[in-house]
Length: 321
Image 1 (cartoon, one colour):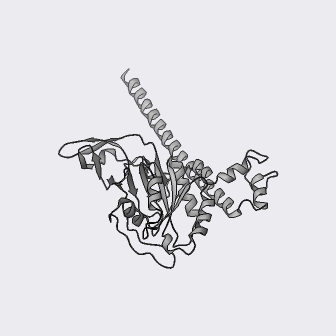
Image 2: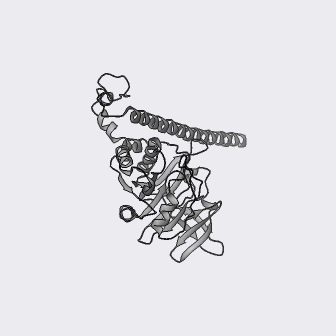
Image 3: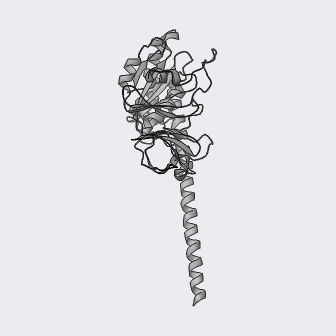
């Protein structure tokens, strides 16, 4: 339900248990215990986790330390709620990044437009988000007036994770869904709509109507790694145009017979969206290449160690003869 350094809160058939998680610790953040994980717990005077079960879905991003590792934000999720504040300027690139993470996780993304009660023109924002998120449910809400909250409760199912930047209204939205003031909230700056982190850890909480909610801290950096499938889902219209390109490996720049560039010329595709599509794919591929290089290096070191041990064994045998 919540992970701290070396300890975690778990929920068992007999109730909550505070347990040691050192036994399942990993140097690779992608394999570390995370909120939403199912685990084997050894009971006793000092309960401890002894194994993690395979994850059926997970929200992962490139590690913030710019290494080739991935960081898991939440595991075994069914719905990803992406909070977008209508009280701040819309950042199309951030929305597309979060959608790529959501699609790649294997869960169902839902975009929630928050703070509709203070927006000048919610309808315009809705139209823009609809273009950015093809095939995604979009719900306009206000935690102040209660608008859209009943619709959101019907759309999300199972285990739901809340994602978005600080100031997007995630904690207020979480309180509305939980039906109580559980998460702390704070004011945001009027100039840019940014806020302080009121949620400082990821925590799993039961919802009154069934299912559970995982609230997360605001995401400053949203690095992508090996999420090409997610990017393709976000930019589905570009992928559709690309199927009519003359060349299968078309990069959609200056190649003859490029259907994507033709769509830009005739005004059916925004060139800014095409640029963001290229950027996300390039970033994802580079990060994936770094990860592959790390795994290859790890495998090479293992082979060298095995070879070294075998040679030492052979030398020992020769000396015994």
